[in-house]
Image (tube, rainbow, N blue to C red; front, top):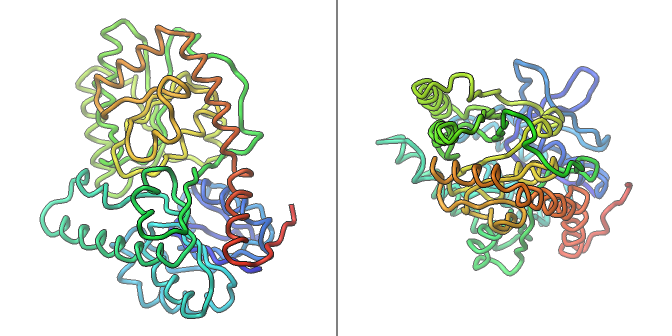
Amino acid sequence: MRLGIVYHTRFWQAADGSLWESEGSFARYVDSLAPYFDQISLCVPVREPAGGGGCRVWAPNVHLAPLPDFDGPRHFYPCLPAVLQALSSFVKDWDVLHCRVPTPSAFPAFAMARRRGLPVFLLVVGDLQSLVSSLPYRGMKRLLYRTYVAWEEWGLKRMIRRSLTFTNGEALYLKHRSHSSMILETKTTTIKNEDIADREDTCSGSTIRLLCVSRIDPRKGLRCFPEALDRLRKNGRDVCLDIVGPAVGQAGEDERERILAEANSLGLQRSLRFLGPMPLDVLLSLYREYDLFALPTLPGEGIPRVLLEAMAAGLPIVTTEVAGIPSLVRHEVNGLLIPVSSAAEVADAVGRLLKEPSLRQSLIKHGYETARLYTLEHQARWMMERVAAHTGFSLSRHA
């Protein structure tokens, strides 16, 4: 059984033939599906990053079906003819198509696969429509982005009507369930059983170390952090924050500069750092060096996979009650939910965790329980059983 996977995460191939992804979460997902297929073709943009580091795809039955390199819709559509030509040559070698959406190359691949009578299954991981209001675009740029989102929504509805569809979290399930009866909720993850820690508590040092793992752009709600840190310090808390993740385009670069400027104006130069992106294998170890995890994100998410990563590392979580997050994080059970992304809400929730060790320890314990329910091994097995039932194919099982 030959599977084609279409997505927009960049990969590259090393001289020894190994496949690599800069960040690593998608590479792990691909590895989790590999035992169920004889061959997997990754139909993704290909470009070796300047830094060279990354996470490897370990499954030997995965190879590249390279698309021209693109970074978002602005670069995708100028190379659309080349993308279509590549897709038309690859799709004839597949038995099943899997699209992780939204991604601009999904609908053309879907249309070609359906013309050949191939079954398709989708994994919906985000909601572009919910992001429109939080983007800083103005004028023609805003109009073009709205047009692109409308096109993606139109294509997604048509794909869902004719495909087995998994959604990342309850919010995306509720949004799309009217389009198809073949829709199921899941929770995307990057953690393996071996990644789950065993510490019982945090916050034992004199300085409390906060961690946020997020792309840097206006949609992530990160701008509240400087004031939140300032509030905590004025309440006598010695806290610092590290933010791990890449800046997304010019909007992301501008957002990072605004946050740093506000931190500097509050005298927090040494208390707030941007560490940049890092490979997942490195990041999973880094989580364990921190005391608390905060993600004050805005609407538009499915369920951020970093929440499960933080739970697996034994970090108490503070995050916003938006999108699919409440279907994973239960308030005062495995995390603290705040209603909006604001400095006051973040500071109050963090302060509460510092004052209530029994709550903190309870969140850690139940976070481990949640992480064990949503490992890569569990998710892949559950999804592939349903794909086999939907397609009627007998999937390979080498593991």
